[in-house]
Length: 124
Image (cartoon, rainbow, N blue to C red; front, side, top):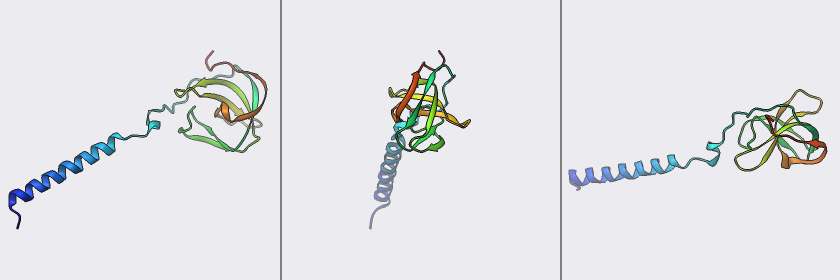
């Protein structure tokens, strides 16, 4: 039979191990937690359009981990308003879906065919 001291020591060791596990797990936050999904200032100071090469989500802010405005199919035409470069060095275009009043952010890498493009940074 274990003594009261041995049981207390075993419980204390288990509590410390559980606490260390909780602390380790809590500090392992996903990289996207640092992303600011507040939309940056945008204006319509550019010209041009682009068609999507595949099915993509129009985003609320210029990061893939931010919320969606709408899912768009390949071939959808968007009119360019301005661009930003996010913290990862990726260019995102603030744009309007042709024939609608739907606006949002789309990665420039998602466009294939483009026309009459003269992009300026948002806010310039």
